[in-house]
Length: 230
Image 1 (spheres, rainbow, N blue to C red):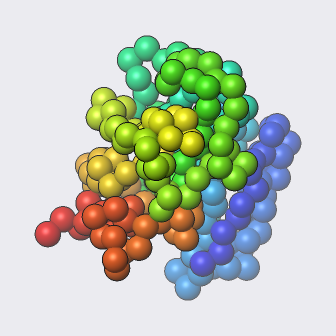
Image 2 (image 1 turned 180 degrees about the horizontal axis):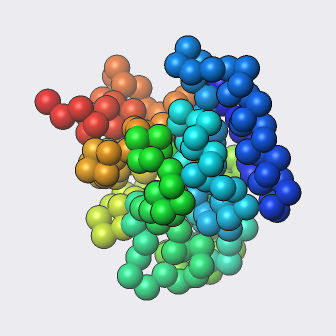
């Protein structure tokens, strides 16, 4: 498999160059013996310069990075990988979701089976906050993140917001930490099956709980069960 990780064309000229690169790669890496994929952000602001339908002609898969919607670069605390947009988003960033990104790609002509939905195996921390939609004073962990296997933080309480398909823990040394759990990953797996998407991917698998000793907490294991129910 060959992955093109541009992240991301920032103007129309770069968008054209991106398509030209894919065309050249496909010429020298013909299918089906070679698999060609790319990783793209979920926000329309990052996708608007790419002719996605044209790109899909050359690609076997588009790994949709359906995470990092909120972080230290946003003005308010928010979910980083929600599946659905809340009814009343507190900011433009809060309107981004896995569903909104998938819908945009499909409208642009990308076949659903080529879309692979990304799941973060880490959480983003917001300290000094009351929660989603509120301001924050900083972040904890390594550069504002914790590996999923280290969540929830000691002394924190884990919650799942089923309305938007997002989870978080509150309290302990991390403050508010937004991440995915087995429950939200199964929701995403159901979404993948119901919408005939290509599957799930995880960034990165090393941050997951062990699928051998902690099956009930493993994102990858629970995602597999969601994609292939017994």
